Length: 302
Image 1 (cartoon, helix red, strand yellow):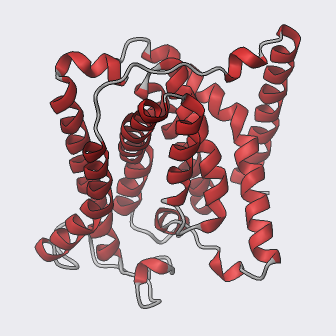
Image 2 (image 1 turned 90 degrees about the vertical axis):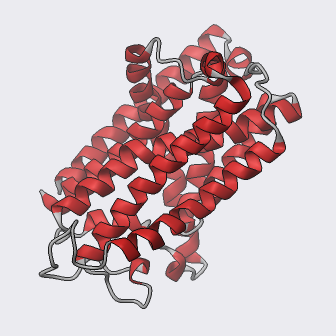
Image 3 (image 1 turned 30 degrees about the vertical axis):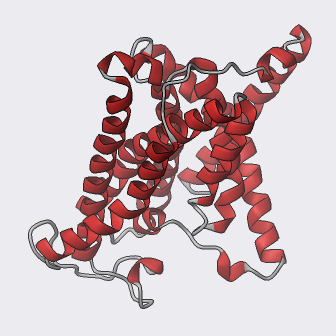
């Protein structure tokens, strides 16, 4: 067995133990009602146009930056050496062929730039509404960060077996229904899976997945969408369900991941409601993505 397969088994066993132990504790203490009674966060004055603007920026910025980067950094120049072998096959090639190493590098670089721009834009939207004094109300207060790091790992471990089970069920149903051709991996996974991918591309792709993507997606889906839905519904669970559904649907390009990511999105919304900390949900999300990146590298480059 490969290192990533052994590590996955250990992780599932450990996570299952934590999940069962937590469930037994809640049953013994009669704490189920308290566990599911999520508080309402303080309204922060976000409007529907704020959220619509943020969603439009999220959907359009990546393609705009990629076009700009492709015109400024022609294939083979500046940020990547010429490819000596083809990059991973998959949807990234557009016409069914794999993009070369320099093209992958341009895309990875453009992705980092786009995510950096989105972070600045989302923060600016909230700053316009709240001012600097409102960061704590939004959840970007970094106090208690070491404790949140530990809890982020524990939360991920406890709920990963559920996500893995949902992923297995979704994949099985797609294959059973004859929709196996619809099972596609995310472009970042295809890039990391191929051991021929240039090191600079691996580094940029991993950085985007572990650091930038969690920040962008948590600011949008929990900090803006969930927070606005919670104020609209005046209830936490409907807002968590809707924001979780939207979070899963943006990953519809890999349909087998939609259901587990809907669950993951609901979990992140619940964690945000419970703690009021976006920093905490960003850490959970980062651990989730980091595990995937590390396992891919263990499986393809060990």
